[in-house]
Length: 397
Image (cartoon, rainbow, N blue to C red; front, side, top):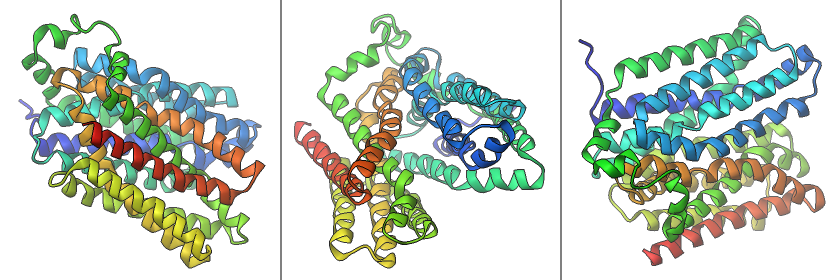
């Protein structure tokens, strides 16, 4: 009989790789927009709608996914979501029009919706309070590595064969990993649900979409606002750094170097953040780290954004942001009981697709109406306001 992973290390490893695969799929399309535009007689602007549709699908489906996680268990929902996303992305290889790409992108977003509520429910069920921050940090690190790997993977597969084969290959790989999860992961969350109050865990007492009513709790509503603000800031950094560098008179390559520094520092510091979150107050970590991120960006503007200052400021801000992530997830996990973990993460993490969809539009409008400098000053302000929200929540607690 196959031995299934049920302990903290095994479950953390499996769901962290799942997070890696999820983030590869999130960035699978953009690196090949130029290729797809030529092959499908479409504009890159048309194809860019696929990213918006992924966020829209996540927004629409993440709360129902969280509810489903707390009814049937995190494993089943995560495996099903990964399989749906893998099939959707793989079928892009058969696309003959931009409409096909957009429809499949939306479907892949539906499959993406269970990742956060399902993965965190599994981590919570398998782990313990003493190491929770480190578990969450490894999970977040897997996502960062997925984002970093996606462009090179898609471009490399296309160079080796063609764009059709690139999508077929990563779709098949995702399906294979869904099978690995189905076979290798013990139903640890279902066990946790069974140990919780039977009526509450089955959902009969809470009713449908109890997660929406959780927003009445000031801490839950406040964490949703925190996720939204932080995502607006970081999505702005990811979307406009290269264009901002060009606007300053530098090259897009410098902007991409600064963005890489931001993301690399965040990835490294998320691991350090897990160690801190297991030892110190989570709210204090968030407030301190985001004040640092806002401060170093503001200092960069005051000093004058030379190439060196731009890169160093972005690196330092990424470090501050990365430190917050495990603490953020510990707070979110503490907001719900064992039978409501999926609901709690489902509703709070909805701030991610909302922020991801709004940031390019809102900061783009600031950039075009006024300047890219003002847009990035707004990014620093968003980090500051997110820190103030966390401070207010700490006092309310």
